[in-house]
Length: 376
Ligand code: 1CP
Image 1 (cartoon, rainbow, N blue to C red):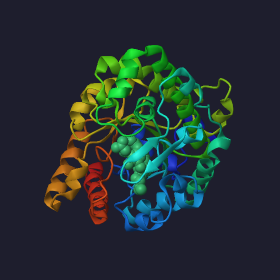
Image 2: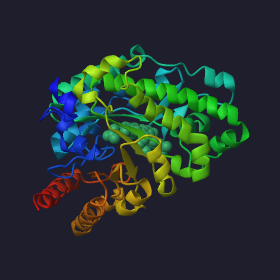
Image 3: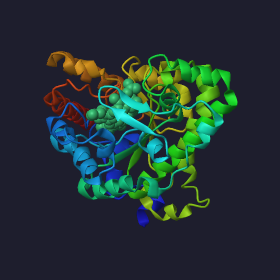
Image 4: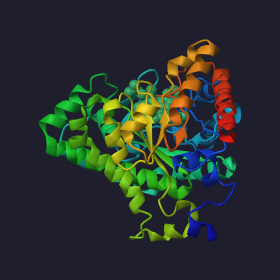
């Protein structure tokens, strides 16, 4: 209703939370904090649930997704939840035969080699991922004012799993296809961008407050190659979400104040992307994720003054003695203040061997130090 007109969200709802405010570069009472892979093997309550359920099956059971997603919110008091799922879930829903193998990661039965292989990746609809729709709707109720982050894998990172057949250090087969058959490469990434966009739309329609596009392995490319082979496809995803809100066709969303006028905030993340940060922002992000190699003030300089930043704490620092952790938290809060919006996070996911008590302490420290600054 009235809130849509001046662009300010309903006070107290998830759209007015510190996390969403920081994504939108608005003033915050404290710096919001969440952790990539906050739901996962660092938590005994997660290991217990997962002991008897394979990974992909757990992603398809809304009651398990809901419980696992809520675990880190209850335990750590983080400022956002992230949907428990995996980047290969929509690809499996699109008909690709794959599994997530314990200790390895995603493994694809028949790696993509030909145009016919690309054609077999079907566009997806809500019905193909109804378990995600259900889990998000349930979570939005349970979470109340805490925002829920939806996510998807970006075309390059998904293409890497599909072409390699599994995790790869060099991405050699992926690059061989990219350089060797540019038309097939763009056909593959174009199809993956469609699947990803459809998957994110399902999550947004079900009620997520923000989305993160994971291009975890984009850092394997030079900036020139990133711009030529990847940027158009990631732009199709991130800009496609904004087009949803501009009134052409899917315009009923304009009636929802939280979604208008600019749609939900979009975070764009990768690892080893120091040289790509500017381009990843250009793809259409509100927030750019930064790994542990680039300090947030340097990242802000590269990304430009109109976007928020997220990340930079080395996940391995959480294994260090507390004074080291504390000094790093202070450094990141200092350097993050150079950006127009700052979301505290790690530079990549929580390592399974991290003591969850340390994560809880980091959340409390970020809140304490940053709310003191906000008072000044
Ligand atoms: O048994 C287990 O616990 C399996 C481990 C696991 C988990 C907990 C996998 C297999 N996926 C997940 C969940 C997951 N995956 C989340 C949960 C939400 C959260 O709390 O953050 C998310 C966001 C992902 C996304 C994901 N999957 C990414 C992007 C993020 C990143 O880590 O870079 C990637 C690259 C994957 C692939 C994947 N899935 C699983 C593994 C072990 C891997 C990586 C394999 C590799 O090294 O290539």
